[in-house]
Length: 195
Image (cartoon, rainbow, N blue to C red; front, side, top):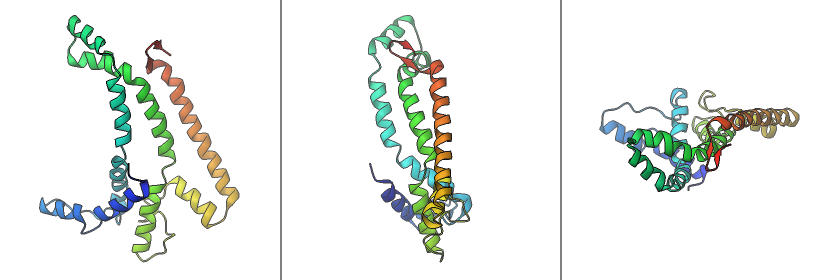
């Protein structure tokens, strides 16, 4: 449960050229990429930072798995179901509301991805000799829509343009969320039956 800025700064240190991760990779004679200084490796580095925060989602999935009634598994054992059948016919349907919840939250968060890319872009931009406002460094590879929106609104002071961008982001996120909600009728199971 580390704040996003602290995690991003910690991973900047860990994935820095000559940092601890590079020493481990060098020990095993593996390539040592310039994680956030190379446009090709900046997005995989951001994925590594994003995977660090998956723990809270795993706690939600663990709670859902513990909430699956044991008598359903016992009945499946009596009927002779194998492990795959129990997973497919009992576990997945019973945790489908949690899968739906995490999918909706993940889509919304994915469109609003900002903090980690901002910290990485600002740090790399200032370390490479540019100003700290050289967001999107290196070579625009960490320039996400929300960072572009931030630049337009708070650096270039194009507030009307930034507001229009924010409304477009809202419309796209709302459309994707509505598509998920509409499709949930076919695959989300609630204990009283399918919704």
